[in-house]
Amino acid sequence: MCGIVGYIGAQQAGPLLLEGLTRLEHRGYDSAGVAVLGASGSALKVAKKAGRVRDLAEELPKRFAGKIGIGHTRWATHGPATDANAHPHTDAKGDVAVVHNGIIDNASALRKLLTDDGVDLRSDTDTEVLAHLVARSASATLEGRVADALALIEGTYGVAVVHADFPDRIVVARNGSPLIIGVGDKEMHVASDLAALVRYTTTVAHLDDGEMATLTATGFTTYRQDLTATANRAQTVDIDPSAYDAGDALHASGGSFMHQEIHEQPHSTERVLRGRLDERFGTAHLGGLNMDPRETRAIRRLKILGCGSAYYVGQMGASLVEELARIPADAEAASEFRYRNPIIEPDTLYVAVSQSGETIDTLLAVQEIRRKGGRVIGLVNVVGSAIARECDGGIYLHAGPEVAVASTKALTNMFVGFALLALQLGRVRDLSIADGKRLIAGLNRLPGQIAEILEREDELAEPAARLAEADSLFFIGRVRGFPVAREGAQKFKEITYRHAEAYQTSELKHGPLALIDESVPTVALVPSDELTDRNVGAMHEIAARRGPLVVVTHEDVDLGELDAGPNFWGRIDVPRNERELDPILLTVPLQLLAYHAALRLGLDIDKPRNLAKSVTVE
Image (tube, rainbow, N blue to C red; front, top):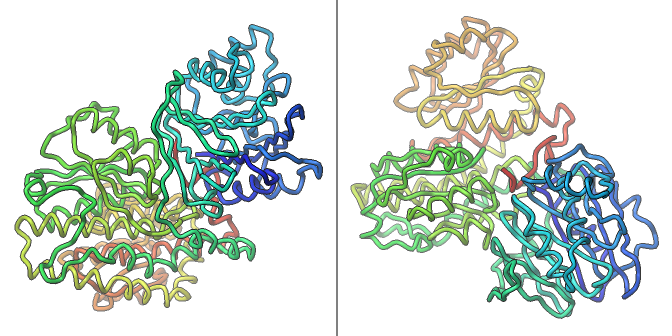
């Protein structure tokens, strides 16, 4: 969940490392550090600091020259955020510097082995053992020393290592945590995310699990841990570097990435739809699935796997698939999937959902499915990511870079991706061409309708401010609305630090209603559908117990006398679409409610405490 950068070439490494770390800070922001090497025979220089990258930059020594370097921004796993626990970590002599993403499972045993042998460990981290193990290796090459150290490690890692005795190279390795090599003009880069590379190059190589690489100024070589060569080659990725640069001015002005990304949704929705709708036959074109109509028709069940918001949008997707394709479908938390020894069925299509494409729980679930012979496709946003490469096919989301920890535009594009999948599955089964065309028309309306909601943002500021003052909230919805409620609660708790719980509206009388009073507000999803009357009835039950209400609904829904009550905090109307597509329009106001509540509380909206954008440790 941390960020790694590295550089070797003709330029000074320090400024490049700091710029890269700034672009990766959404992956971890407890502390940051850099290490650089100058010419042959010069000492390794290390600077690290608890806090943000800007704190490190302010204290970086003026004499910090070196054309080889590695850097790291941390999300803590072992030990609190202190200067000592920040990466890079070094050996006792200060010849070796290591940055590491992941978790070393046998760190306690290795720490004991080292301390029993007289090594003075200076941090609480698992990573520090790697620096000492590299230094203690008797191998004649840095590659051999790193391989010897990794042979003693159990766990996951993305690692970059520099050594004062080998000032012409960086050695990197991957096992379960992403690393990407960037090829420049007589210079090489490495990072854990494309965001740190695209300003310099779009020619990249993704390391596979179990693979190592040596970077010099003139190129790179890849090999396995036993040092036998692999055939990894760099490829040009189809990505617009300016999409990442757009955030620089925003960052400089103190603006919020989350707010920007919420407002990018009309355009990002257009991108995910572009070229994928076949109006003539009322279906979708998803060539990336790598399935012909006969294979598609043979699917008897859909299982969707994701974590956090990806799990909740997976529940929305399961509902879409069942309604449109009439295939049994359900969503499950990927983090739990492989631990229950799941039955992998040959006629089940598994769908892995991840914004980054590197979510470790989801990646491990994909590997488990493939190990047992199952077919799995991915819904991911990052081209060339680990999940995308592991899957049999998939749908790229084309949401563009998403920096804020709380996902907004990527989630919306996930929903649209599921709608396209459900449409294609449905049209090879029993969904009529008329219904297919109806849904295509609805999908084409989505960007404009999302824009309509965003134009009324100011109306949400007042109810958001009132919700911000509550210590605990309910988000409720039924059937299609329940996953929307879960996602709304997730957004609110992520960035406001308020307790927010989602419940099915129908379940209120079975326990949760006991908690309703004037101090516990409810955000209720009441679309115009077959359950409107029952939902409105439940709102009256809440109002009768003096529970404050914010209702997200459609314009034609009659709330009776609810909106005249003293505890009615607001009505938010969203445009109507086809019933199957309404959930995503109900979701957008919940993003804005969470954003404005956090803004009112003066919190760091883009980087909420204890969280990071890409979860790459179990």
